Amino acid sequence: MGKRPQHGPRRKRMNRQARLQHARSTNWLATYRGKDVIKGYCKWFAVDPICALTELRMLGSKISEEKEAEIRKTFEDKTLARRRQKEAAAQKEQETLCIDSDDTFAFIAGYTSGGAVYGIEWEDPELNSKSLT
Image (cartoon, rainbow, N blue to C red; front, side, top):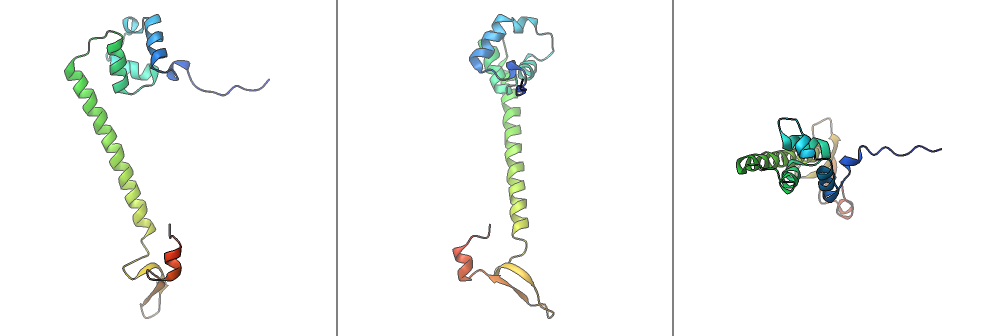
C-alpha cells in the first residue's frame, strides 16, 4: 500500500464557497473564543487579512470601518515592503554581476603589471551577438 501525499488540513485548502459553508455549518464565528476574530480566521483557514475581513462580513460579523482601514493599510505596507526588498535584492545581484566592468570593458579579465586593464570591450562583435547574462 503506497503512501498518500501530505497536503495539510482540508480547511486550509478550501475555496471561498467551501470556507463559508464550513464556517456556517460549524458555527465558527459564535464558537471563536480568541481576542481578534480576523487574525483567528486568517490562521484557521490560511487566508490573508483582506479575504478574512470580506468573508467575516459575509458571515454577519460587525467589523468597524476603522479596523478595516487599519487592516488594509497594514496589508498594503507589508506588500510594499516585500516589493522593495525584492527590488533591493535584484539591484544587489545586478551590481555583483557587473562588478568587473566599466565604461570601456564589459568584462575585466585582469590587470597588467603596469596597471593597465584588459578584457572584453563593449564594442566587441562577439559580445553584441551573445548576451552576458
